[in-house]
Every structure is written in structure tokens, then in C-alpha cells.
Image (cartoon, rainbow, N blue to C red; front, side, top):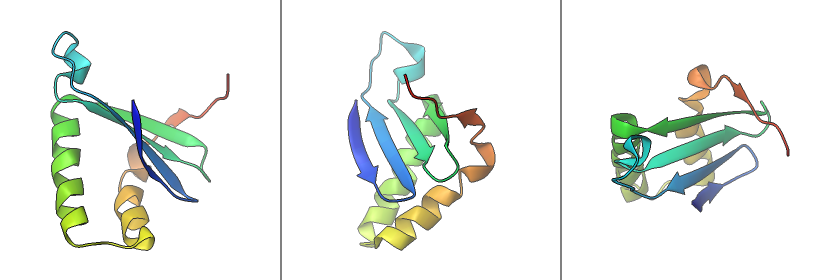
Amino acid sequence: MNLIYNSDNYSVVEFGVDDAQEALRFGAYEIMDKPGRREIFIGGNWAASFREHVQQLIASEPDVEAIDTFLAGYDEVMHQPVTMH
């Protein structure tokens, strides 16, 4: 598990590839919307696609606002509330 992005609005944690677990076959990501207090876990082919889009975004040398805008594209599918343990 590796925190790969953290802003006032979003954080993204990357989970490494683990061939022994189907959900992590391509790695996985957890995206958290801080103001909305919700998150989503993406794995499998969706994680591979997310990684590809992130690599394209990074190549454009984006600022924090551009990255947050990209991550906001996942707001519609974030239904899991963030809870503290």
C-alpha cells in the first residue's frame, strides 16, 4: 500500500500487483473524496485503465487542480462512506 496522491480534496492509495488475489491481479487503487467523506476501491481491469489514464495525465505535468478535476470524474461512483476505526 502506497499513498501516491494527497491534496485537500482527494487522496489515492495504490495497492501493488498480487497474482495470488484476483482483485489485485492488476494492482488496485483506493480513491477518497475528503470533503464528501466517501471512497471507492478499484481493481482488476478498471485499475489497469486508471493507471494508464494517470500516466497520460502525469505526462502533461498537471497542477493539483488538474489532478483533482481528473479524480472528480470518479465522484459519481463513490458510494462507500469513509469511516474511522
